[in-house]
Image 1 (cartoon, rainbow, N blue to C red):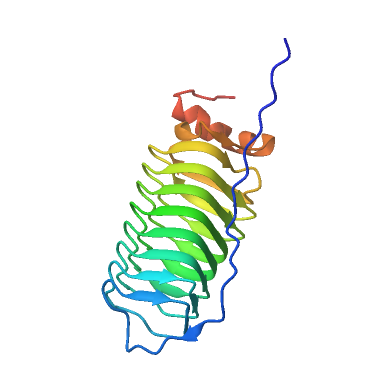
Image 2 (cartoon, helix red, strand yellow; image 1 turned 45 degrees about the vertical axis):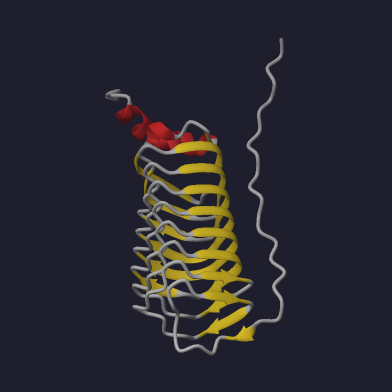
Length: 222
């Protein structure tokens, strides 16, 4: 009996059709603030504290987000372009139908967050914390991810396309339909034994062979 061919299900991408935004005119962000159909451009939001805020149909462009507190925030049908910052706190946030383009960030806290139909395109993010997060229909495209932490996270229909994944931690991860084949650079620091549910290319298999061998205790000698 012939074996049934299996394929990796592709991620569903967001389809943003944003209305013409109104300018953001408030003095700053507020806890539990409700922001609908707004353009936030070139603002210094560093250090502001807005847990529980909701952003819907918003454009966030060229804003500084250093240590901005957005725990439990909700981002829906929103695009962030050229944002920058270190220590942005989005712990336990919810992102649905969101695009993040050309971000330059470090130490972003997304642990416990829920990401659904999200595209992260271009730019560089160092030390991204996605521990125990839930990612479904998420695409990382053309972005450099340095030492991202996916520890204990759930990844379903997640794609890495033309991006650089350096020193990734997949400890305790659960994967389903995760596509790593088009990842330009794939370096796994921990959790290679959790790749069940992922698809890699033959070339990547060869590159990862020493890591696989070390994970199962195989000694390779000439």
